[in-house]
Length: 94
Length: 190
Image 1 (cartoon, rainbow over the protein chains, first blue to last red):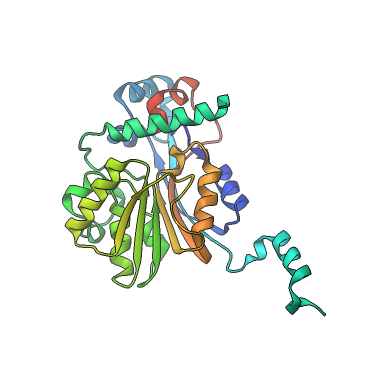
Image 2: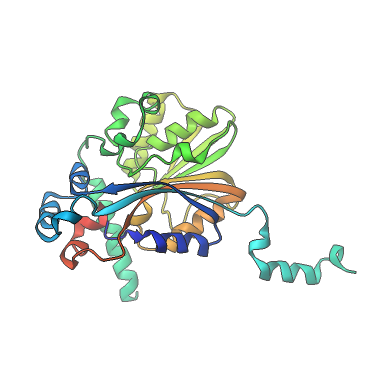
């Protein structure tokens, strides 16, 4: 969870590498009770979060999202490559 | 090695150690799946379901498609995908831990799937050729990686043009968690 991003940042990173058509299809609150079911959250971390987080925050420490994205169907997402090809491809010559 | 790279290695080691030391969890991630899906997963594999969502149905898999499950763990989502794409399709699961890959292979054999393979590898440097899969699925592992943009770029690289990805992961609120929580070692693995 320390490595989790804000949803907006996650979306920005998906788009930055070239993905399109982002749709967040599911959002579920992930609270301390959820975290406690995962053995990767050690008991001392759960206790620490119980102690430090305000009660109203304990039911939604994080949000589990599910999202879908698409890789564009053409290479048009790399305009520099297209420009280079257009300059050397005989088929594109006038 | 720069200080930044050392920090990335420390994160990777923390995550690897946490998953390596797991002793028969009770499948907390199984709560996201319906009975029909769970029936396709061997009971022994259900206890190793550690994801934070159920991305496979959102991938809308079709028979014959090639799928990669990144950070596959013990392989539950890969097994579901294998059932969806059928004998003419193929699924490859990639996980950092050899022990988890061995576990996934065992569960795949138990489920009777011949169209799925599991390999050890890092999500930041996938052992999968360019533009070779139709679909990427990922369940709860991007947040475990120090170089997230690199992971997403690798997913983009291995997808064929027009391919799609269904990803489930934890996100946080804009306001940060207390520093004592964020810097706790097990907060990197959970």
